[in-house]
Image (cartoon, rainbow, N blue to C red; front, side):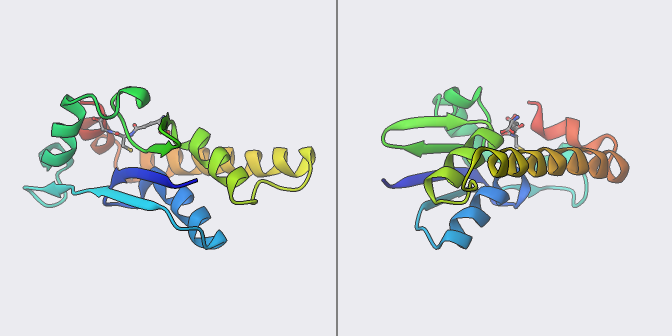
Length: 133
Ligand SMILES: N[C@@H](CCC(=O)N[C@@H](CS)C(=O)NCC(=O)O)C(=O)O
């Protein structure tokens, strides 16, 4: 079944799903909304006109106005971790028993913790400015 993944044109929280598709050599539609900063390095100046227009149209309502969002069989799924689990199962990369599935889930949760801490260290204020509009 064809799948469409929408996110910004950055790695961010959609990259694990893109990597799952790549590792499994499964084709999908990779929609990437452009992001630009009018002042380089200043995240409060991020411009994402195409995304904002689609958001205003309700394109991302299923994901509470956010991306990533995955479309599969006419259904939209939000939340990066839910998407990862779904895609991993679809492409046969979610382990071969419940223990392996739990271990895979655990590693994914570890990556969230590591990402959160890394970002807090690197850019304490930047994250709040553009992801929470
Ligand atoms: N918990 C959500 C977070 C989604 C999220 O915050 N997405 C950000 C990009 S990383 C976004 O869409 N920001 C745009 C906005 O809030 O308008 C997930 O894991 O998918």
